[in-house]
Length: 163
Image 1 (cartoon, rainbow, N blue to C red):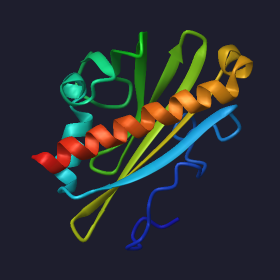
Image 2 (cartoon, one colour):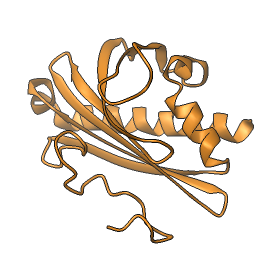
Image 3 (cartoon, helix red, strand yellow):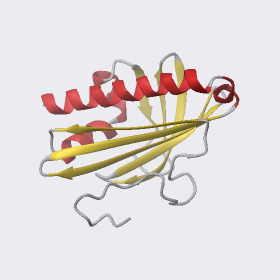
Image 4 (cartoon, rainbow, N blue to C red):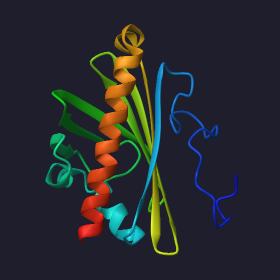
């Protein structure tokens, strides 16, 4: 898919190479989107300021980045009682960030894409989960992930639009 077309949104299902897309075959895959009435630079800065996540997302207790945001950087965060260490796999400033890693037996890949058109930003979030805990309760965990991502998008939208 060409990213030059006005309506183009990077499709995280496209084969982009190792760990640059969600695992479409995982037992749990959630894909959501929201539009935000705020400048792309502001939305991107808010979303990628990992240490500030707890300020606007009440589901995140803490978040710490180990070095500047770039592929290979890791960040630790706590959400819903889980301590997670995520690795940044890909970053295209202002357009796309991919991270993931294991947490309590769940292997996750999280893709975020951002596109601005006519002053409105479309944020897409796609996440896949696999692993033994997911296989044991796929419907329950899909619901939990869906709810969590809906809240994340809502909080991000609310904060960006209130600035």
